[in-house]
Amino acid sequence: MNFGGFVATDSVTDATEYARALERWGWDTLWAIDSQQLYTDLYVTLTACARATDDLTLAPGITNPKSRHPSVTANAIASLDQVADGRTVLGIGAGDSAVYSIGRRPASVDELAESAEKLRQLLRGEAVTFGGEPFRLESCRRDVQVYVAAEGPQTLRMAGEVADGVIFGGGPKPETVEELGLANVRRGAERAGRSLEDIDIVALTPTCVAETRAEAVEKLKPVIEPIAYHNFTFSVEEAPDEVQADLRSLVDAHDMQEHGDEEADALSDINDEVWEYLGDRFAVAGPPAACRERLRALEKLGVDHVMCLFPPDRIAETERFHEAVLEDSERCP
Image (cartoon, rainbow, N blue to C red):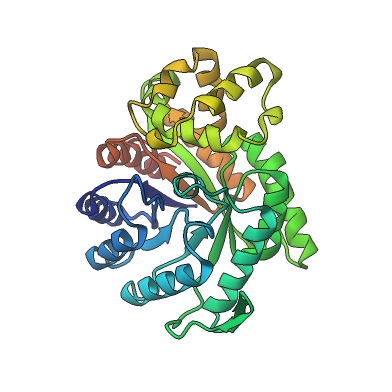
């Protein structure tokens, strides 16, 4: 199973330092957020990281078809792929803070499916039609794989049908991955005459190693809260009855201007019972042995890649996790 780090920053230098650290530790991928009001530009950041590394895969994690037209995204990722000498994949989803910040709504399932399919065609060097006009990507040198981010059943089935990979954002709890994620991706793949083995499965995972899960979740609060918001905006009914009202309040309190902010007002409004549920559902968090146990369960299910979202001091937190969980696991399998 491969591991990737995630970066959301207002400093390109910070991103390149993290990219170098990931490569030094032998990690597979750097995923970078696309949120133009809050963080550095996605493609400028990833281009700088491409120049600073030799082996690390570089990936939007995650762009969308609303704040960037698919033809613009296709040209951007193909150009980045040239700089990175083939070390890219493209992650695309419905959209979140980048979309809301320009007064638009996230893409529908059909819109996202169309965008992913046309992106795959463009990146294979094929012609597509936008607004009745033919378009072909002259900068394309390689078939860059397109991964679709999904949480709900309908989007997961669509992703299984059209994407090279699926970024599952519903949380790394093994039961959720199996029953919500893999079951629906499999159904979509079968509709397209494929199998689950034909699709790269990525688990989006807030990650922190600490003496207790409560201590780890405390550090992860600004990371988990926007993911919970994104999951429960339209599907709070999938959560246990006893936390649904609190989760609706979380959704109502979320402020896009504070998306992922350590000082976000919404964090203080979530009670301990809800944080316990959110930590269990959405994170790999706690003592090293507990982290390894959850990761091994994900690997056994067939998850190919874990996209790790660490607390704000990401280099120190990633190094601590790498040494305490991954390196120690190699010594003591």
